[in-house]
Length: 94
Image (cartoon, rainbow, N blue to C red):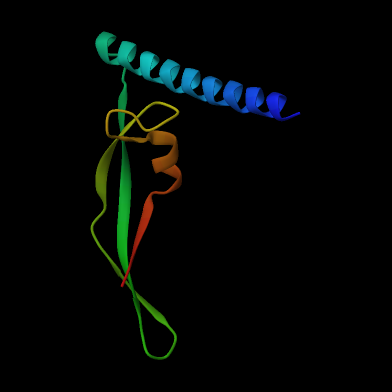
């Protein structure tokens, strides 16, 4: 039983490494052939300032574009575009 569990965990780790390496390879090919490996998402950040009466004051900053990468995982130091599009509002807790 212990041996099967260990082999299952090893297979899952190997599969995860293979998927990550494949994602990186596809991204490198897209960079080399200039097939839009990067994108931009407009990110809006704001300060959430708690007040004494249990309310929160919001101070909004200007929206700015942030570079992202078209891949499944974070690659080359950029966040994936699918993740950044879902988390475009960035609260800064005070």
